[in-house]
Length: 70
Image 1: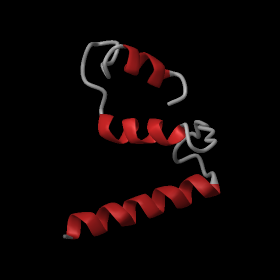
Image 2 (image 1 turned 120 degrees about the horizontal axis):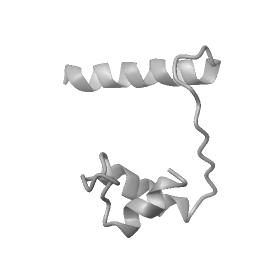
Image 3 (image 1 turned 30 degrees about the horizontal axis):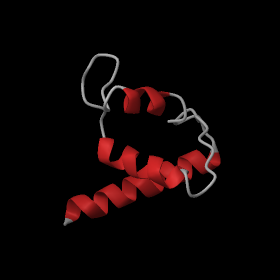
């Protein structure tokens, strides 16, 4: 997010393969909010037994199930 977003914006939200950036609407919203609050993005390996990451994954899955149930 902190590295690639600058290139995406410069290239009109296109990837290096000239395809549209996925979830562009969400990334644009995040980018606009980054100017209002201090945010630090850190890559965390998924499913590596890191408690906070495992909990975030659990909550995301529950949220997705709730959304799909509608």
